[in-house]
Image (cartoon, rainbow, N blue to C red):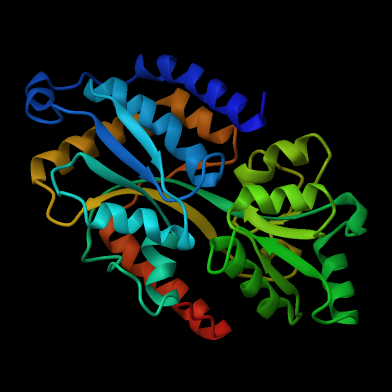
Length: 327
C-alpha cells in the first residue's frame, strides 16, 4: 500500500469522530443548498500537498451538507489549469477550487497570460490551512545543517541543485528567497509536482528540496530524508528539533504555503454563506485540528479576501526580485 493511500485512510478514519463535535447543520439551509453533489477541484496531482489537505476536508464537508463532495484532480501549469476550470464553471456553488498560495496569489504575477484573474474571477469562500516550507536533503548529500548548505554553496556557486514541485511554486520561490537572504546561488530543478521531485530526492538524484512539510514528513520520520529547517516564524510541532530559517541566522525570514476554498465569481450569497458556516465548523473541531497537526499543517482562519490581496502583493515582489516570468 502506498504511503499516500494509507495516509488518506488514516485521515478518513478520523473524519467520523470529528463530526461528533460539529454544530448541528441547519435543515433549512441544507434543503436550499446544496441539493446536488459538489465538485472540489484540486489543481495538482493526487498525493501532493494540496490533495492531502483537500481530501479530509471534502469528506467532512460531505457529511455536514449531506451531499457528496467529489475531489477532482486537475493538475498542470502551476495549478492554473484546475483554477481556470473553476473560474469558467457555472457560479452555482457546485464547483469549488481547493486554491493554494500559488493559484490565487503567486500566479497573478508569475504568468504573462494567466487565463483568469486571481481576484475578480473567483468568490472567496474560506481559508482552510497553512504549513511551512521545509528544507530537506538526502543523507548522502553531506549537509547536516542549513549553515553547512550555505557554506558549500558559497564555495561552489550555482553547482548544488535544489528541487521543487515546479517553477513558481511556493517551494521554488521560498528557495529563491533563501538564496537572496543567504547570498548564495543554487541551481533550481523544477519538477511536475511534489511526488516526482521527492522520488528523485529519495533516490539521491538531487541533494536538496524545498517543499511543504506534509509532503516530506513521512520520509523524514523514517530517516530517509533529513530536515534542515522550516520557513515558518515558529518551529513545526511535528519537528520540534528542526530550527526555523530565521533562527538559523536569517532574522525575519518567513514564508508559508496556504490553502483556501474559492468558487467562481458571482456565486449566490446563500451558497457562499452555507459553505463558510460548514468549513468554519470543521476548522473548530478538535479531531480535524489534530488530523492536520499530524501532517504538519495548521488550520487557518483569516478574512480571505483581504488576506489574498496582501499575499498577491507579497509574492509579487518576490517574483519581480528574481525576475521570473512564465508564458
